[in-house]
Image (cartoon, rainbow, N blue to C red):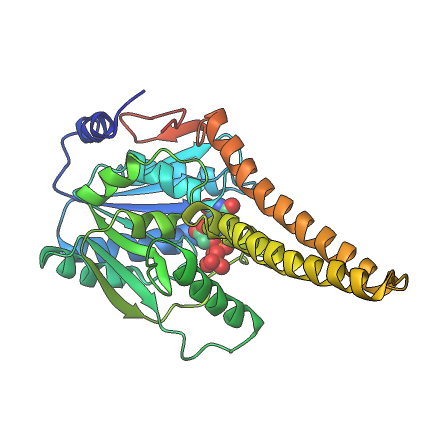
Length: 335
Ligand code: UDP
Ligand code: MG
């Protein structure tokens, strides 16, 4: 088993000679129609910055022509590189693989659907040169509809801040620039359940927010259903807080104290007033209520146990099918 410092050193050594430039990591799942316009705008924006750069696309096993388009783009411009997963592992894992393979002195994360304006990377780089180690785009939500989704998102941030151990980047985190130090620290984190935003906050470092208004998706549609968002929220809370486990001990103590008092009261009353048979309703309510509480407790325990199970299996984070333009590929992404 590697220690943290071993892993840090190893990831530094694997980074290669290009340590001065910029890497842009883009996860892509069925984004064939977005790749050409994205790359055109991105290359133009990066050339304006003037640093050497590489664009690293992570094809999350798309079912469309994403990989073909990518290989073609690489033939036209070797600065465009890519790897393809053996199956769909999800965006968070695609980002983790991108961070692992990026060689730049700073790494930018962005989506493939042109919701993140590539022109903003220039501003990110300015802030980075001024000393920020994490620069992130903060979505301006003023123009958005205040729908149920937005309300739930807000609740989630509130909850996470109340129970989690770290402070998240509000309205941001998927469009960001990380200094090499941050990337090395992230690469050294071994967990399988990857809630990126939480990890970015957990590693610390100097953070600067750059406000921006996201554009509409260029082509295709979002893959984040309510159910996937709910699963993400569960992952997030269980990865960064044990409060849900602890609540039940306190509730248990409270209920025990109340039962003790009630028990003493009933005993006394029976001694003084004799046996009182009616009481079916209160009995049923109590039995049903505590049955429910116990099932919830078991459910919460199960959530954590499930996560412990996935971690101890130590399966790889991802498996790479093929790659283009990369000198060195970590094909099986173990921590
Ligand atoms: N994505 C991915 N794997 C997936 C789902 C999405 O790599 O299983 C990528 C997708 O190609 C895009 C980014 O993650 O570049 C954000 O996805 P999307 O636009 O669907 O999410 P939203 O912008 O609605 O949060
Ligand atoms: Mg999007």
